[in-house]
Length: 383
Image 1 (spheres, rainbow, N blue to C red):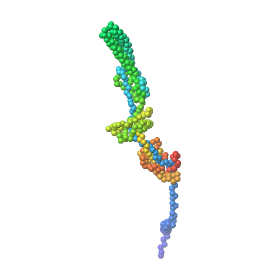
Image 2 (tube, rainbow, N blue to C red; image 1 turned 90 degrees about the vertical axis):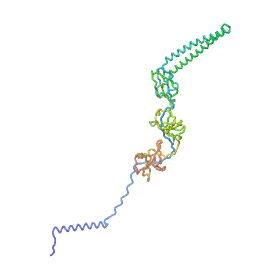
Image 3 (cartoon, rainbow, N blue to C red; image 1 turned 45 degrees about the horizontal axis):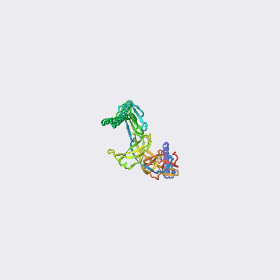
Image 4 (cartoon, helix red, strand yellow; image 1 turned 180 degrees about the vertical axis):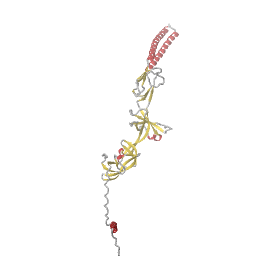
């Protein structure tokens, strides 16, 4: 007899067999490839949005002046030391201060004149006395000569009268010379400016005694200043008389001067020579200032771009050059350049950029390497 299994165990086996059959059928369907359809190829990414709206320019070749930089001090062209011409007299009045502009012959200070005035009066009195004595001696000499001709006076007595007359005239001349000296001394009680100029120093004080060789004032003659630029000996030959120089004071103000002379010798310690530059009358420069400047040595071509086209990053200079362009869209590349001189709002490019390249005119600081840009006509503001 056959054993027939029935009950719950038989039903579970049947369900397991059905599940396994279903799994095998599904696997066969997928692996056969019938259920596969090729996925649609994704569409290309839309064009990247422009980072900035820019205008493009090309570098310009311009004739720029060749310059030689130098440093030096601003000093007085000539500085006169003014002192008293009489000594041991008190200063009674000081009429000028440092910085005052004076004219030739102007009184700068006064010295006590009462003692000198008495000397003048005494000399005048002596002259008057000797004039009278000389007149008397002259009259006696003339009378003696007449009486000698008539035989009343001897030759010896006549000679005595003539000698007395000459002696009186000599004494009168000496008295007049002393009077002239006293009057000259009186004129020296006023300390005068020897030339037009500016008072640069003052040590005169009311009440102090004047001394021989004492300095009372310093005067910058004509108010003229000069720049004594130190230039390496190798470059001295490039500078000639009459060359232009442009100075900058500590505040950045510019003053133009002209070379007056080049020193014939060089400092053996520094190997630098002095170049003397005449400066115009200006409030921008003062004697004693340190100034930087440049000598103009002629013209030479220079490749230049606007200053706004150059951006400084990590100590280097860059411009953004157009690399790819399509219609009014483009892509820029950050390009490292070497900059040189600056003239106005333009910079000289020494290397790193071709004259035919197109670069972003302004707004370079907002761009990065590889940015997409929208191109507009030159002169438009970046957006």
